[in-house]
Length: 256
Image 1 (cartoon, helix red, strand yellow):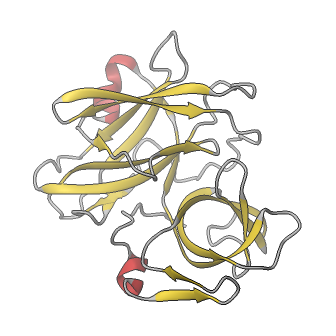
Image 2 (image 1 turned 120 degrees about the horizontal axis):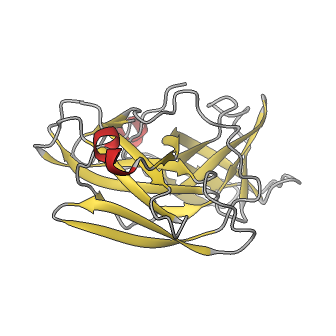
């Protein structure tokens, strides 16, 4: 299944459920279904079962999902859900998922040194500092902001490893706007598997992210620990250095 990265504010799901709510009888609470209230990793177990990794220690069992909608591929996704009282023995808690929307989930790529600009582009972005920009469960998920004309031209994004010969936990975000560099600001969301980084052996280290912003070079750090079950076996066959991402002002960026 081909995945399109969507900004959380205006997605296909949001357009049909903006002002509606969902009431959980078990918790007697109201959930606004128009907005994502969690970022998870969708982990298939079998054809008829999957679970959602909420954070490093919390697993959610979706009682109304018969297997993963993404087949046997592990992906990051935005969801809207509420807790239910029933308990699954193998997971932290049971939940009812109102909707789920996968985001572009990619592998990292190695730095090519002087060839990076030509191969991966060097167009500016801003990394948005909010709850969706996070390092967890063996992924680095980034909400980024750039400029688009709104005509649906594909933008290409990648996360480069082997950037610093002295520190393997330095990575670089690269953006190729594909000539789409005029217009208005818009956001995109993408997740990168970090299984190509050296194993931290249970230790938490500083992961440094670098990127070219508008007018300057920037960097920030995240806490990172190798996921115990980290594996590249789930790679999407469509992952490559140029994959699909949508851009519209505070709505959608077509990215690859």
